Amino acid sequence: MKSMQMKALALAVLGLAGLGMAGSALAVCPPIPAATATPGGGGAWTSQTVTSMTFGNAATGLNGTSCALQVSMNAGAGSNTKGFVTDASPNNESHYRARFYVDTSGLTNMTQANRQFRVFTAQAATSPAGFGADMVFVTFVGGATPSFRFSVGDTASGGIISSASVPNLGGKYRIEIDLQQGSPGSLRYWVSDAATASSDGSPTNTTTPTNAGWGGVKQVNLGLFGTSANFRLPANNLAGQPLIVDEFDSRRQTFIGL
Image (cartoon, rainbow, N blue to C red):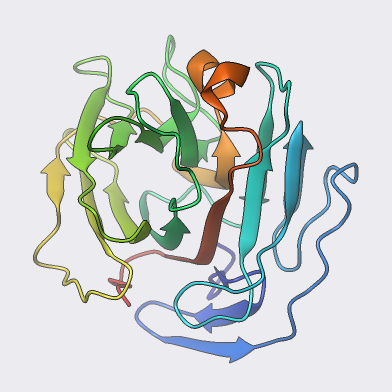
């Protein structure tokens, strides 16, 4: 993060924070640049990346905000389909916390586990030999009980994958991560109903990767990307079904929650 700054963004809300201090100021929903304007920015974000996606403001936001980012795949989209915003303000963070809201209720055909996409990734500028830039990424996986899958870079085991099954919570969730580098390091994460309080001491799960070899979080992406072939398959009718993300907030140390 830039010194003493965070992003708390509904594509409408921008806040300022330090180590344990936060505030926010409502603003008129900013216009999102045309999908062909890549990078664009969408308000306070550094840039946007859009390929074979419909990308814009949702009519209403999550967590009481006035708007949010809505993304849906276009019909006939290929393997490079993606629509996400990027925050490049992190400064090689060895301790990184982030929280966002996500509404999956519009994705009514996520009925099989082979229908997947990434909704969030935190990346480093440098990584160990043989490993990619991703320090942690979150995948939404379809099925009878869909799940959010948390994957974290780990040189000891080649990567840790941990899934949090998603109960029927109306499709609106709050996700938070707390990533720390070390040998071992730590990834804690929280998945809850968007309106349900959570606490720092009660994460959904904790994993202990060996991730000291990465350069620290330098960039994060939020949206709909990294889609599986079966997510894109026309017969599965996922084209035009929207994902909504909102209220992204990142900090170095303090728990974020509601």
